[in-house]
Length: 263
View 1 (spheres, one colour):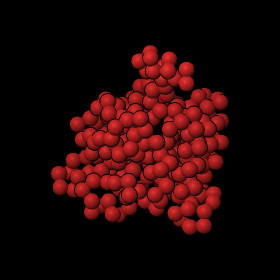
View 2 (cartoon, rainbow, N blue to C red):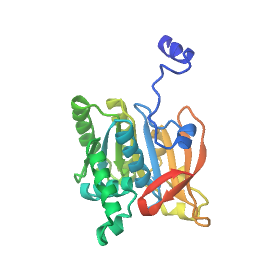
View 3 (cartoon, rainbow, N blue to C red):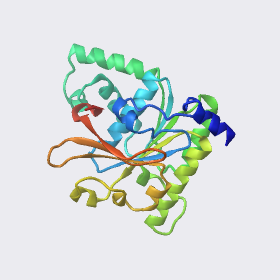
View 4 (cartoon, rainbow, N blue to C red):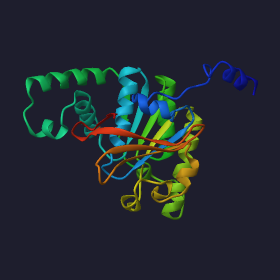
């Protein structure tokens, strides 16, 4: 208590702040990547949750020299690496795979590859990963090179270790993810699918979190990313924030580059 009081009296300088996201307007509203905290970033397929998580990981590794572990359960390491390089170089990944690159595009791609290769980012795409597997990998990385953030893409694809039905299995995974963040004392950013009910709602709600209501209880922070069906504008909704307010923020989503920017 005394240590916390001194930290607060110092204006928060001694408190452990959350990691920056690379989006100044978002960081003004939320500190959702503090040590030991579990943050759920949820959205429907195609809304941009993987793109947003990748942008955050790229920013931390390239511009803040942080160490990030990405557990990719949906895409292979090759697919993830292609997305990273093309996104950083601001080149359409589909065009890069199917059309000859211009000399300028080739230059940007080579520079992006060199920049990303120097960063401390590890992508694990092994199938049938459990939370215990991620914990063991995280401990090894933290001991060898340090570890600042874990990104999991996405929750429903983690292999459950217990539970008779799907709801119990997802609830078990959710509890284990919170324990993972506490055990490693690093923030965990876990992507999550929303149910189809979110398609018929004006904006996502916590009740739309797919397959388990336990997710919203275990998470310290819950963020939604979605595209307005009428205006086609992209939004981030801060639905739950431990120690902070809720809110929403309009974003610009450059789908051709899989990049978000402040609106």
